[in-house]
Length: 266
Length: 332
Image (tube, rainbow over all chains, first blue to last red; front, side, top):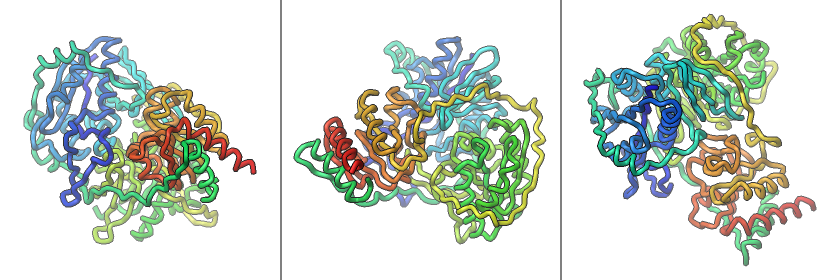
């Protein structure tokens, strides 16, 4: 089973909300000081999905990432978890893209990698929360797709996928090759092992520029965008919280109930 | 570009009826269409759905395109994207609104890429720019920490809209509208996914989406046992119990109870958040809550920035006393 997993380096979404700052003049997010970037969490779930198939059925996992200033200790994490190869689309030209240009670049790179039965993406990236790149890659490559997966098994040219729905899940069978986007319901990604970290150190990533994947500069990154970001801002918080006091926590609870009654909420 | 005109709504069907999100989209679409001085249409694609066209007109549509085909019984990207592609190429709407549901999340991006246009997912506000007449699409980004407003020069302008972000019109049975049937024209051989089984994990009682009171717990509850106390309070208040993501990821409560960006969107009158920090990703599911009440031992927790009332203290001590007093007050 040949598998490709797309992962994105993002600002750590677990950083405290108070550290999050937007420069409204430039419509840009200011990276919080002292908080290193991470692999977008749903992409880690996607790596885990591929690793589980590799554990059960064998196979090779190629990790694909795109951007600039990709920290090796971040983008190599999937290797230390057990993935085999790393391809980086690393160039200024890839920066500032939207789902349209990003999906195009990733699809071109996947074409160049060539052999694949399954492509995995996280359901959405923790920065723009767009949730379109996976489906876009599938559309460009002419592949079937299943989104929001919580469990995947693959054998005999087919994958069986449990897809998250509002009231549970549906079981879907899809012919391979196929693209699957993974949701957190799959379960947490495994931790890297010491052995894995050592092995990852020895793996040199392949680094490709737009020309290597046959992408014109005008199609790439910010130049290839099809949506315009008009405005980026932080929503204002409304009002002040009325903190209900009490001599003890128990009395606080009682006073809260009385306050809700007074406010006609009970 | 000028040939694309009008606003179209993808009217999702659930359990043989127009889904709530479809009525919300029609309400929002009506306003956008009126602002543009253009027509509002709806597309209903499914199996045995022709009877729902009248309902879409009652909720604001001028025209309803019905695609009724046995192959559309279950949502599958290969069938639904193909049908929506056909309808859009025929009707050429300037704007296409789709629900941010498990169907819409799948349908919208594939359709946008197929039509070589763009989509913005999970919009919470939509408006027409008075100058350019293009659609301003506002969506939460960075897990709800920021909001972004997008436009695009490509048509149709596709947006998916978050549940409960828009208000339906009161249905009016005297509204006039036209119903147009469109052939699906699907070839079963092109369908590459098959729905084998649908599993409902919905728990008994009031649904989170419909509840007027929601009691919700976070990581600080510490385990499945603690949630029994939350369930008890929810029962006393005739509400529903929910959770932020960590309790679901840890298996303390079923995944279908998750409230947040990637879970359910709730809009109760009263939302009681217990031992829950109030991350942006969780609060994204609570934007419609009218009154948030927080119990948390950390006075710096983000939830106190969102709450109207709060108690700073250990929930294990605060909650039993609170539940008891609530029970007493409600019995009076």
